[in-house]
Length: 271
Image 1 (tube, rainbow, N blue to C red):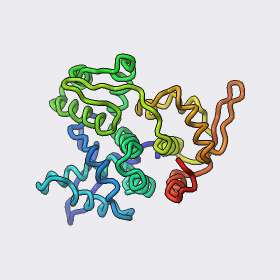
Image 2 (image 1 turned 180 degrees about the vertical axis):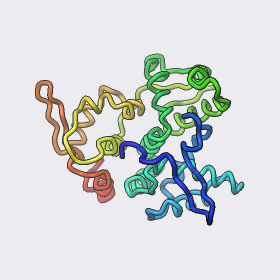
Image 3 (image 1 turned 90 degrees about the vertical axis):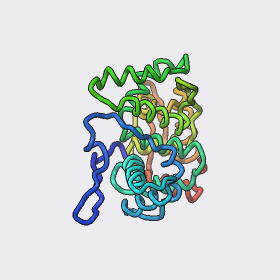
């Protein structure tokens, strides 16, 4: 799954439809993260490929009583966690396997930033250049967004949502008016899930494209651990082959994302 195939989901409600997603927006700003709730609720989704059933299950377990708020919040969650418009097997089962663990927080954040493309921009522009200092003031995010979207009236809410997403994912910590961050150790299971998602299908891939991939960089994983982690995945049977000969640095995968998660679930691969 490389990118959302649609910017609009629709829920049939008699003769009416509820629009979900970016089709309703004038820009890339977003006012609610809901990532913490998404991480909590993903493991509770029933065995279904029906988006309506998944949405209703999420809606029923949200910690709010207001009907309209539950509708909006469940829409936010399904749009970001299932950007292809179906509650896919890999995400549902990975969530159950890694409930309560950093691996699930990683993968949920990955799905989130696939849809909310402002997030990788923020990380590339405001976080990675200051990774040595390990801190960014919230007003710096606000000033960046104000310069990018001078007419927008929801910048304050977006800054809060960005901070909430970074904290919920474990990518950053919040301290008063600033966010603290540093490079993180790589969790092999979430690295494998994201790697397979970015590759899309079995084949041979350039290692440099992993090292320079903005989505992988946005996870704030230690860059010096990416190649060793590829080798560890090979040792565990997740990657079939790695070749580093002169200028040619490649790896080969022979499974689909679904097959990867099935192997994790069956403990055929110990990641």
